[in-house]
Image 1 (tube, rainbow, N blue to C red):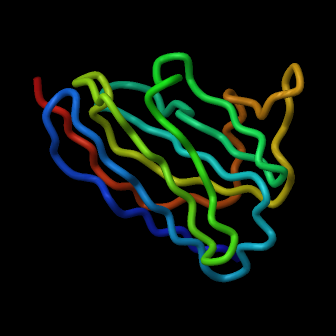
Image 2: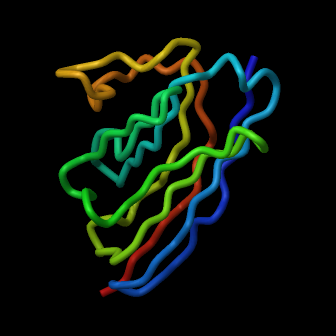
Length: 129
């Protein structure tokens, strides 16, 4: 079993930055594929960024060039650096982890896979214009 706890959310103005963290405990070595998702009110949950055990990454088109996903294996923490934030980025952000390596589509971690085994409770990000 793996427990995921997100932190780092908050309120910022457009153009600002936030760094989200996701601390993994339990048996994090058994979660090689990790991702950040977000869900705004009345919207479906969507993948924002995914990272595989070999370090390969993939991003939603809406965040490419602004967000960076990374993982520190030494302290079992997943990060999401968010720069140049826009009001459209406002949402609850969730960390997710799976027992297997990421599903690949065209050689990159899938952005449509939703069957992650473990989920955090989320951290709220609000961006004002």
